[in-house]
Length: 554
Image (cartoon, rainbow, N blue to C red; front, side, top):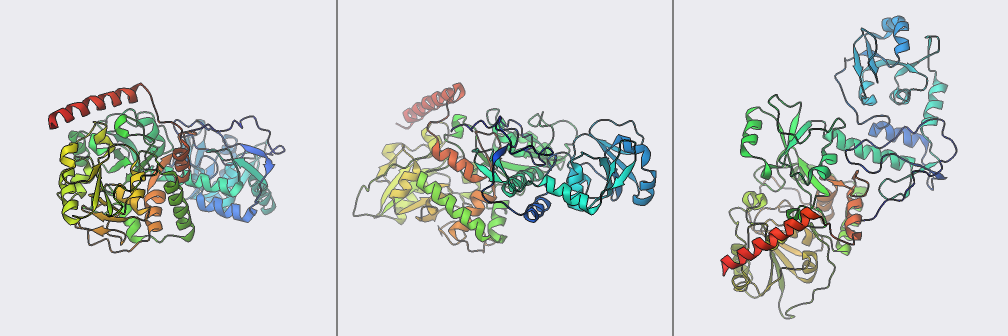
């Protein structure tokens, strides 16, 4: 999928007076580790006021990803051990003293040791006492917290307004450009701030997750950065300890033993469902190819209409900004132009098989998949789906495409070609489903993601179960759509919720969480599919299982 340009030795623009305030969080497994300032000036220079407003809104700068310990409601925050002996007057003025140090101080005052989120540590501080070169002063200035600098003799002085202004000017190099960690292109300061804000939102969303269960070993490395809470990730996927975890647990339910789920429920430990994203990878998960996208839902799986999910709530209740809809439209157009689907890419032109008849694609699924069992409304058989479509569309030219996991021999849902041809005019096992969607007039599904992919290509879609995209006014729904789905959504609103707001994405090149557009670009420009000993072994196993299944159906 390509490599990033090496800019680690690139000369900086002048000599900055201090280290850059903004940096990449230490995500597990990241390959691109530091923000690089380029020697060229930014093409579009934001104002310092815009940057200051963005930093305050995003709460980035310093170790914003680090721990958020419990702090008192009001206190004098001391960062300098040298200042401890000189703070008695300040304590009288500002109240209780709280020490925050990078190493263990020789002090009897309440102290917190180690890296912390400076925005969190300063949220209740009445004042800050620190050394003159401490970058935490910048965060304090942004928050309007009074700051005292400690002198060489242990004396301290309050930063006055002009010093605060100079400090912020130094921290906001509005003329500078920086290397985008995903592709190396030049970005300006406000774009860098927004990127750090994107990472902060992800990390903050994970602070309630203390571990994960049910994750296959071959996908843990790609999933962990998307579940990381800013702390020590060692042991994240370890078996549950006997004591209560410090937070909730992320679970891959289909691979989690029922006993562990029962144990979590008995101990009232919150669980967060994790599933593959909608643009997953360049290859099958059943072939042990790790995902580049996941979804994490605190309410329940998005494919289960039995209760609302976070995705359903986004679609039901959210307002979508024009800028977000613009992103959604561009992303959709890129996906369609590249022929991308959940597992594959294909832009081959498929011709019409019978020019006198409407063409309908029937998408098969894995029959024991949870989306079928929860959202199929009792319809779990691919053969029964095919029969129902034929009964509704007796004159149409039906094309049946089985699920790639079934074709690969890994999952349940096989229909022999002889039986399939009794109801379908053509059975196609190879090629990409996106090419077939482009070639047909309609797509009929139970709960398959193929229906969503067809909507993005402006095809009519009929649903027989209750997929997540049913009930919003974009599909013909034959299943029992929940009455709580009352909002009517445009296609770009559906795309914005499904591909931009709900999932999480990992850039395979930099090893960093990234916006959806980065993964779409990686998948669209991929020149080969992932390989490896495990993938080859899994594919061999699938071919053997497919032969056994074919033999049994004869």
